[in-house]
Amino acid sequence: MTNSNTCYRLTLSVLSFALLLCAIARVSTAAAQTSGSKLSVEERIGRIESAILPPVMIADTKNLTSTLAERMAALHVPGVSVAVIHNGQIEWARGFGVTKIGGPPVSVNTLFQAGSISKPVAATAILRLVQSGKLNLDMDVNQYLKSWKVPDSTFSEKSKVTLRELLTHTAGITVHGFPGYTTGQPVPSLVQVLNGQEPANTPAIRVDTTPGTIWRYSGGGYTIAQQLLVDVTGTPFPKFMHDTVLAPLGMTHSTYEQPLPKNRLPDAATPYRANGQPVEGGPHTYPEMAAAGLWTTPSDLARFAIAIQSSLASKSNRVLSAAMVRQMLTPGLGKWGLGLQIGGTSTNPHFGHGGADEGFISNLVAYNEGDGVVIMTNSDSGGQLADELLRTIAHEYGWPDFAPPQRSIVPLSDADFDKFAGYYQPPNAPSGAMVYFHIYREDTHFYSQITGQRSVEIFAASPSEFFASSVAAEISFDASPDSAVDGLVLHQNGRQTPWHRVPTEAAETAIAKLQQRIKDGVPSPGTDASLRRFITSWEEKGRPNYDDMEPGLAEAARKQAPQTAQIIQQLGAFESLKFVRVNPIGMDIYQGTFAHGEAEFTIAPLDSNGKVVERRWRVLP
Image (cartoon, rainbow, N blue to C red; front, side):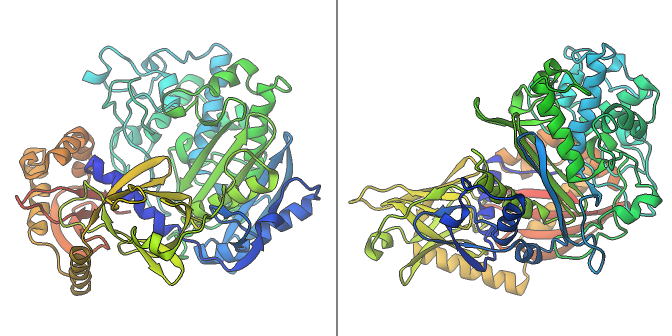
């Protein structure tokens, strides 16, 4: 649903640099977090609970930490449940916080929605049928499907969709994920979801790219796989999953039943938004069970991970053989195996998957041998907490990955630093969108700040390289000791984003104008009319006017046109457009009302030729 300039999408990712700043309150030394000493399990849990580590630790100094309770409160996460795998066994499992505000505490048996962690568990059932010879990973899936068929398209004329491609997100299938259905909403059948027919709230699932050519995450692909399993086995999906995977692996608290049966609701956590408000109507219902429908506990998912480890080592093969697990864990495009993301090194490989349903965020990570962790939360902001817990647990257990790196600070004089001070901009920022990277000094402390976001203290790793302790990011400046500084490169999340220096006076003038426009709530000239033309062009011509767009945006819009057309059709007749606000970087936000729903539009100021350089939109829940 997003129309976006590719270069600028990369630029926008740096906003997370400031947003990840931790509200930290307690001080402990890095030396106190050693993993080599022999500790009891309770001591380990206590250390983790009392000192959540920052993304980067500074050597030979005190590092700021916070308690788990403090981080949960700051992030509005009512409850979290954890299970830690050590030496191939669940070493400990514990719940923290409450299942709902004012409700009972989280226990090890509290149920959470697993979101997309449903996928690798479902993939295991498919691989079980492959192993028994009932399915072939490389056969056209239409040979198995009965209730529904993958529609023919120009993309699949010569290359048919296969199960292997569905499980590895390489089938060229549309629809990334699913929002689910609130209490009282009609729930579509699986075929209605596949066809995008009412009451389905997502577009039709189709092939829009030649299968096998690219990696692109697709919940739609797993929904096709779910229908295939039902058609081949003649068994309801929840029962088949119970009999084939959940029961054999001892996942006794888990179920794919949607909605959760009423007698089990007392065991379930209540989902919450990132602002601390409960998800309206409680847990959503997901007919897309293979993609997002598993109710489970961290301990049950840990049993799943241990089963993979055990099968790989030929110690126990309750569901899959060692040979099949090796296939499952073989990375392909995008470093994905059959249902799992593959990471690590050749000496320490690991597998995992994240999950996000409305009001629930979870993460599963396990090494091929030995250790791992499952973290489940009942909040949309639980992802950050899960990341913080993961790095703290990884440090406690001495894992080769995920733990915060340790950096050293080199002395740097104020005068040496001041040559870096100033404003920087990305070279491909849309006209009128003011994204600045401000580097400045206050007394003896150095800071960086993205426009509209909080500042982050930075530390010198060398005369021209800096790092932050509150987020895993580094800055390198383009400068020799005797030359002027022309730019910098931000290194974060495996990306290198260049920024060029701009005159300080011009930047401060532009920022002041932006702040005034935000305060006054004034949209940029022409954005209202441009969005109206965009919407009505779809209604009248079945496509937008590409001549209204900057070439890069027009190219992206053409690629996304088939999916956009489906969404526009589902929204129905356009009724009204209302300006909402100006965002922190100067882009205008509008809300559009349609016969069957609402959408939010974000658009950058038009360029000097009146063309759109950046526009994104999403259907509102």
